[in-house]
Image 1 (tube, rainbow, N blue to C red):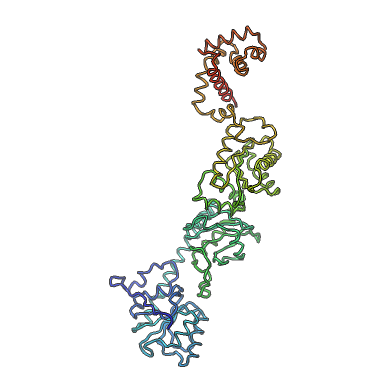
Image 2 (spheres, rainbow, N blue to C red; image 1 turned 90 degrees about the horizontal axis):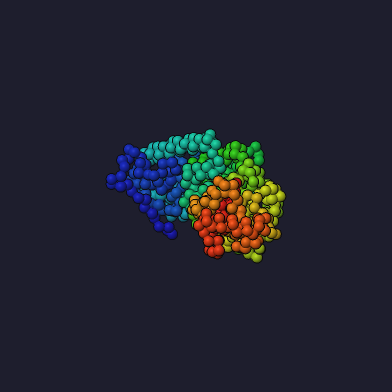
Amino acid sequence: MSENHHTAPGPDADGPDTSVPGADLDAVGRPLTVGDALTLPVLAAGQPQVVTGTARLDRPVRWVHITELTDPASFLKGGELVLTTGMPLPESPAGVRRYVDELADVGAAALVIELVRRYHRPPEALVHACQARGLPLVTLAKDVNFLEVTQVVHALILGNQAEVMRRTQRVHEAFSALTLRGAGPQDVVRAAAEMSGHTVVLENLVHQALICEPSGDTVGAALTDWEQRSRATRPVHHTSVSGPEGWLVAPVEYQGERWGRVAMLPASPGPAAPSPFGPFGRFGPFGSEDVTVLERTAMALTIARLTHPTPWERAAHRGVLRDLVEQRHGSPADADARVAALGLPTQDSRFVAVLVDVPHEDETAKAEELLSEELRKKGTQALLGLLGPPRLGILLSLRPDQPWRPVVEDLSRTALDLVPGTTVSAGSEATDLTGVARSFRDATRVAEATEPGRPLPTGRSYHERSDIGLRRLLFALREDTRIQDYAERRLGRLADHDARHGTDLLTTLRHYLDAAGNKTVAARSGGLSRETVYQRLRTIERILDCDLESGEQRTELHVALTALDVLRVR
């Protein structure tokens, strides 16, 4: 024989009592397999040996069938563990082949033959026929009570079926609770991954992965080359296994309109082996509970789409952008795979973060919708999403030879046309996704340093880091109490004097400092005589206890005066 005999493990001396059949198995909730059955004490007592089909012992056992007929297949439906003493086996090799072919064709799980009465070793013809059809052949060296085997195995099968029903009920209850509390798509997909222990992905009609909840695998492993792999997985009309990787997929639709599909990935990615179990293996590595989970997931996603106003794509863009900003991705590979799965080019690309601040919070959602549609029409490669009212975040993907400023300028003018009064701030260029968080931080600093109504730079409709001077830096830091304290310590006494006496010494100081210490220019700016300016400057020196001829002290006062100006901005 070309295949070595395999002895099934026998019962432990301290193992469970046979009155509790299968108590040593961890198979509750999953189908009982041929390998599981052979470890049961009632069968292990017969010293089973696996002659053929060692690699197929994971076949599920649906039932046990005792037969002494020459044509037992006519009484089978598939998935049976067939027990025989060998008495009915045909004499001729051709008859044996026909006997085995009929068992294999109907989908029998395995053939168990007792080597006690007719045979003391398995016939060569039987071994060769089982090898040819991939049917597990198991021999028993000792007498076994087949009726007891039937009782024990059937009790286990029925017990498992009852457990499956209980688990299915829990799945239905869990998804009903999600629906009743108005759970969004992200919550639904996360629950599916947790309940099944599989990675679950929601995609739209153009094969963009909108939500990925990994289980065991990383996001990078789950979503790498997603579109290509997804397109190789044919569409289905109902929950079923599809594609070269053996995904369990279900359509998400409503009243005949399909919106996308949800996919459950096998635990170990790779080509799916064809199932040898006939109709009982149509879901491959997935159990009936997994099928129930995915079907309820599709249903809950349909309800979530009907009850939640935010489209899936927009919610997906928001989620990815926020994760990039807050650096919540597990690894650079995860970030790359997730962004690419949404259709944004990441290979040989550069990135620029842009922030769009609309003038009124209640205009943010409308601006997001309009700008997203406009970018799509122009073919701009970008992710756009709400970071928090009234701010939109945009991640631009650029070719290596593509200058970023013209792209940002076009984007900015589009935003201003759609929502007048919008402020656009650009971050620094990033060579890969790991630098995107820094680009968003730079754009945020630009936005924070931009006062309301700030004039646009010459020749540009957006602001960037190079625009931040002293005034804009102090404006960005205006809530820092150290800035407030500095301005008050340097100029508070002068401001108090003006308030008490109705004078305007701060304005005179401003003209003097703006004129870089030139008293004549300061007098002309304030419409005052030189003598009046001299007198006022002496008063300022006395009140502030300073020397206005000192360049250092003039600089300190200029910074304090600029800080005071930005602190008064409303």
